[in-house]
Image (cartoon, rainbow, N blue to C red):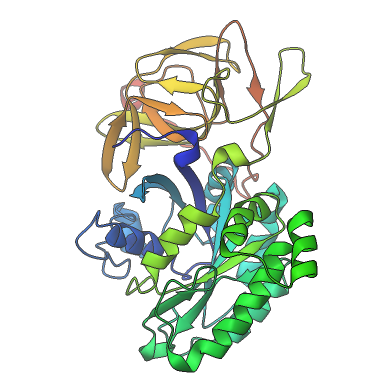
Amino acid sequence: MNKYQTSQIRNIVLVGAKGAGKTSFVESVLFTAKLTSRIGRVDEGNSIVDYDSLEIERKQSITSKLIVTEWEKTKINLIDTPGYSDFIGEVVGAVSAADVILFVIDSSNGVDIAAKRLFSIVSEFNKPFAFFINKMDSERADLESSLESIKELTSGIALFQLPIGTGADFKGTINLLDSSANIPADLNDKVKNLKTELMEAIAESDEALLEKYLEQGSISEQEMTSAVSKGIALGQTHPVYLGSSISAAGFDSLLNSMVRDCPSPDLLPPVKVKRPDNSEIELTSDANGPLVAQVFKTTSDPGIGDIFFFRVWSGTAKSGGDVYNANHNTSERMGHIIVTRGKERMEIAEAPAGDIGAVAKLKSTTINNTFTIKNNTFVCNQISFPKPVVPMAVKPKTKKDQDK
């Protein structure tokens, strides 16, 4: 795995109702990036992402997964989340660690009741979000209806792509921001009109750009491109992308858009953390700043034991270094920092501000804990996980069964 700076990182969490195609989305990303030789299928039980035996049996995601992808000299940390409401805690943890929420919508259903309920939960995080209308190769694909249902959720919706064909004829997408695809003659007028609409939506996110647009009637492609990330970061622009996660059609363009449009951690507002005296301070994503990283997820692996996934908000976490657990007032030795891609684990030397990593074999750390420096401690605000409807605990019958 190459070494990446904060500006070269994108943290995107996939959220959507059950069956929208989030896991298949990740499979298509890996295939398009040439990290796999085939697109895994959830329904066939050969998905790289849903590899747990229970997930294979149920043919659905049960836990969130960190999937690292490299594209155009950029590291994309994708977090796939379950769509079933019983596992909403996995979604909450993943959303808290990500920078951009990509809401996956089934083109046949649009934003249904389950999707609306999920959107209302994740929108409370006040994070930038975009939409991906999936299954454009479905016979029942309805772009106009899906787009209208998205516009009912929020303002600032902007269509960034236009499909080339629909249903069985779906071949890919035209990127409206730069018109990178070859445009069929019968779509020229439609592309021109939609590009004007997109230009207006982007201009509205920047006062100076809007003034120029109103005076001159247009803005350059370069000006639009540079304004997109800012508009998304401020929550003023919400792009809508299109594609098919079954065939990976349109995913080359989609990955280019994710790198170009989604803001890097250093372009986002600073995070608020607390000092020991409970006063708040804002920290930017500065790799040279004081270390502040928060554990947002834990899991267990039979081979290496408990694994702790963390997001670095400031400073740099280094493999083999000592960190201070500000919640438990204890020191921990950071072993090998890893990133994951399904079952595959890759070691990295360090995780700079804005990055997401994982570490195993910690002694005193639990979920929601903050890694910091002993003489300069900060504590992240606690992630508010939903309370279980039916609390339940499993305890060993004998001391001999404790490790099991």
